[in-house]
Amino acid sequence: MTHQDSRDVRPPEQKGPAKRGPYSKGLARRQQIIDEVLSVYDRLGFEGTSLRAVGEAIGVTHPVLKHHFGTREQLFLEVLREYDRRFIDAASEGDGTFVDLIQRSAEHSMRVPGLMALLNSMVAHALEAGNDRSRAHFSERYADLRRDIVTLLEEGRAAGSVRSDIPLNEAASLVLAAADGLSTQWLLDKGADLRSGLLLLERLLEPPDRPARDADA
Image (cartoon, rainbow, N blue to C red; front, side):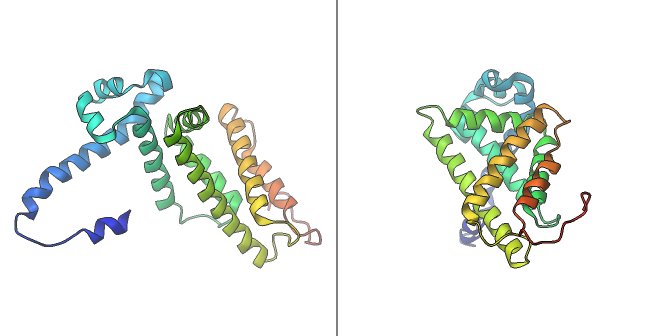
């Protein structure tokens, strides 16, 4: 995406600045809408957050919303893509393990009111017949997450912290399934210990002959 932007930057005729003004203004308006949708969603929920309700809440006309996003589904998916991008941009800290990745992802989502509720509602929406756009988005998102986790497991195996007798693709799917289930429990009840559950899974993936660690390590 970024590459496409930089590729199109040509310096032609001096009309450029005048042309870019409305374009930049449109991008700024689009970003403002994305930034404000979640606060509306947090108040009104999935059923109540129509394009009209969003427009009324943030002072944008219905035609402007349709121009930028087309449908409510597209608007919601773009909000989720934007927050995924923000998480990736901020994901340089951490210890590089899958436990750390999933923990920080859940904490990132919880810091933004409405984000996890929208994510879970849209996953459920994607499972319903006829919602091909959402289904494609989440299929790709889960495939990307599995690839990221496989990479972390490969690095762990090279460092001697992941056992060598298991297929890493299946292990990544198992990690992701555990993360989804534990995250849902944590969202409903903060007493559910997401990190401890993931650390237990991490220990189960370690080589059998690896020296035991302290429970707090």
